[in-house]
Image (cartoon, rainbow, N blue to C red):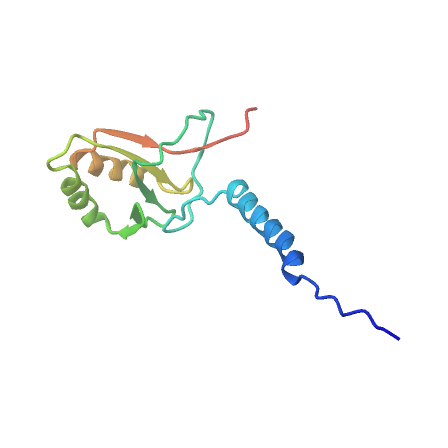
Length: 135
């Protein structure tokens, strides 16, 4: 009695479709997912009826409800704010700044910060808000 020689199965042929599916899923999630830049602290900006686009490459000043300041990703103090902005403006054109303040922030403090920004040489200031529900 003759027995047939055992067949060798090609194990790589079963793995290739799996690798293809994994790479397709990876590409899908890279395209479909969007990551937003992280702020130094959480801020809930006030609502607005305007839905203008935000430019990503401008300098953003964050002011939290408890009066903490962050310029970009760096947490700073009020005294260092003017010096940092003046140093940024030296030797360059006047620059624009985006201000993202918490909705619960005291308005007098916000006006005080805006005065400091004007003295530091900020040419144009944009107050960032979120689009509110139209009533």
